[in-house]
Length: 231
Image 1 (cartoon, rainbow, N blue to C red):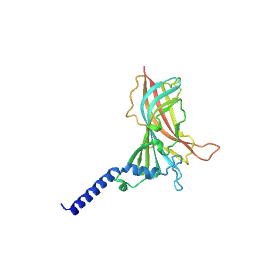
Image 2: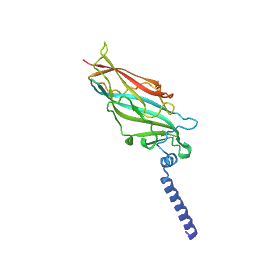
Image 3: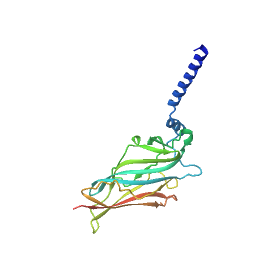
Image 4: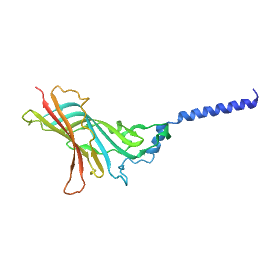
């Protein structure tokens, strides 16, 4: 092999090696994160000039009743929320067809939805929960929670039933800034039967409250549980 052929072989071998190395270093998820989070401010609500209201859907899955005391109800649930953030948009074909990402939830704006009749609830640490973000800007978040709510079970009805409520709403935003919706009834498909209490019914309603001070609506999602002690 003459020197010219040898140089050509070395050149193309080096070029191929460099291309492979560059290809291995290209991580589509990293490139998308640079795009959508490079100048992202998670303190800014994702309402735009043309669409100022952020619609947040709140649904709930009941997993188990932990304790049904005389004044409080303790249960484990999954809270599911989803909303659109127009800052979290990318074109999949520019990123090897990638259509979704799983990212730490506290790296994006989160709706301040809380349980109003909270009796000491424990919500999964947001820093350890991951959200799924889709290329069209939809964010899906499932939060494992232990709900402790005030519920007086000392005065059941004639059938021995007690109705408890969980009322969720935004803590600081009115309905023109964060509008809550409830797209499906509560899910009980994963519920673990309790040996001490029967869950007779679980349903949900969306409500709007207007206060004398303010013209804006204040929406909430209220879940009602009809319970009955066994024995």
